[in-house]
Amino acid sequence: MEQRIIDRLDRSVSVIGQGTWQLGADWGSVAADEARAALEAAVAEGITFFDTADVYGDGRSEQFCGELRRHYPEVLIATKMRRRVEQLPENYNRRNFLE
Image 1: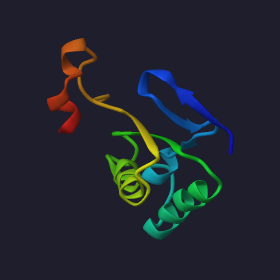
Image 2: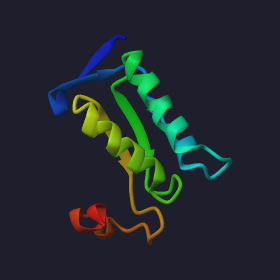
Image 3: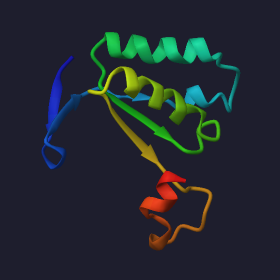
Image 4: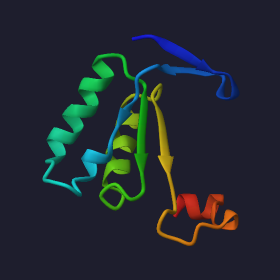
C-alpha cells in the first residue's frame, strides 16, 4: 500500500483510508466480530488511516477504532466530534473531545 507523509504530523499514512460509518450499525446490523474482521482486513491490506465520528452508532465505530489502535499503534484514527451540540468554535475543546 502506498504511503504518504503528513508533514504537519511527521508521519506517514496509507493513501487509501477506511471509512467506518458502517461499523456504527445505524443502517443495519453489524456484529462486533464482523466489525473487527473488517478493520483487521484493512490493516492486512496495508491501510493505516481510518475515519470515524462520534455519531457513528453513538460512538460504537470509535470504540472499534480504539480497539484497533491498541493492537496497531501505527494506525492513524481521524474522528469528527461534537456534532450534536451547537456548532460554535468554543465547543471544540479538549474537554468536550474527551467527553
